[in-house]
Length: 116
Image (cartoon, rainbow, N blue to C red; front, top):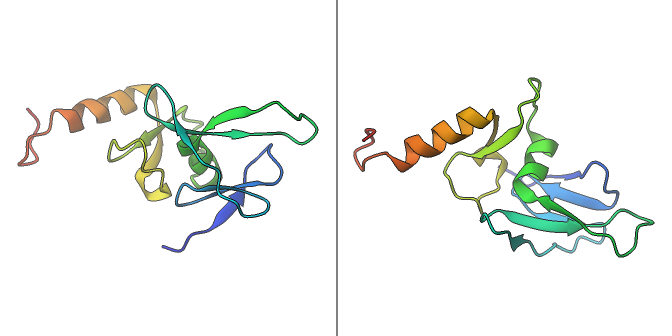
């Protein structure tokens, strides 16, 4: 898969890639930080609002830019449970119930692939 970038809606001059990178208009990659739940976040500024940083979760930026959500599902699931793997092919829109079920199924999976 080739890396492509899309402008982040509402944040002119910032772009997110299908690989989970966030860059500014000069092409400099923003350094994400890990929040208390283990998700990667970046701070984005709206032009004209100097000093105000909007913290955004990288996986949601990727999903909003590259994954259609016609059913307006509220959550983004990491298929492999790795909260640092924000590649588009590892993400999917889900309901809260689907997200919790996926987590529990993976956590309870035996090495042979069967569920405990």
